[in-house]
Amino acid sequence: MKKLVINRILLFLLGYVVAFSVNLTYIFPSLFITYSYIFVAYYCLGFFSGNKKLTQFLLISGIIIHFTWVSFFTHFIYPTAAVMITAPLSFYIGIALKKQIWIKSKLSLTFVSLLILLLSTVSSYYGDYYLANLYFFNQSDLVEKQILRKKFPTTTFLTIDNKTIDNTDFKGKVVIIEAWYTSCRYCKQQFPEMEKLASKYSDNKNVKFYYINNGIVDTYEKFIEFIVIKKGKYKIEFLYDNNKSIANFLNQESAPQTFIIDKSGEIQLLLSGYDLYAKKEFIERLEQKINELLSSNNKCNR
Image (cartoon, rainbow, N blue to C red):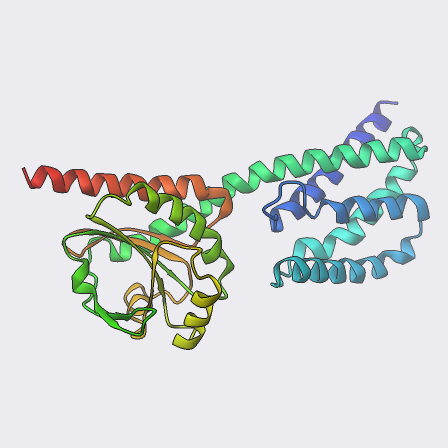
């Protein structure tokens, strides 16, 4: 009897770990839309069929579902090893569960399925939140150390009116720049948060925000096409880096790259990348550095 109870607990935990692992591979912005459904669907199939010969089919179908689901909803494909092993593993768990006396009824199976789905979804959300903060900010710190307090090079950018501006105009201001490109969805996810932050300093002439297309992926025409489509949606000024100066300076062609330049033209903060689950801390770090620079400048001017 004791062995049976232990087996039940281990099976449940195994199912939970599988679902949790799958969720961590990729979670959509909506909390309850996760890959747990793959686990639940497959171990239900395992429970009702009990046919181990279906394993290969389930493995292939798991990959197909993964690619179709992600491509349809995000227009990006993120193949992961976790999803590829989920189908057969979940299927075997279903077969094992069927052999247990306690889960003979469909009602019991439904209850266990929903319980695992709920626990894995909630815990993976917070797990991803923690890992996002840990990984994202650690990566940013590594990149930041390489350019911190270096002078941003003198360069020019193109405005949406195809006029040239010199970044020497930035001097005397605290400048916040998000380097981006049009097909970067993380860049566009960051825009609303940047808009909120910029609104806090809208009355401060010493603070300036820019969205600067890094010029690596997009032509100027593609950049303008995006601006036309999004006309009036954003208040922060858009510029185009026709010299690719930001990518060359940071030695980073990826995006988004968000950095702060102080009044003397030195880089004071760099955040490389963006994660929805770390957006609060992301904005807090930007705001803290902006206020710190404004405060130090005010003291110097006294």
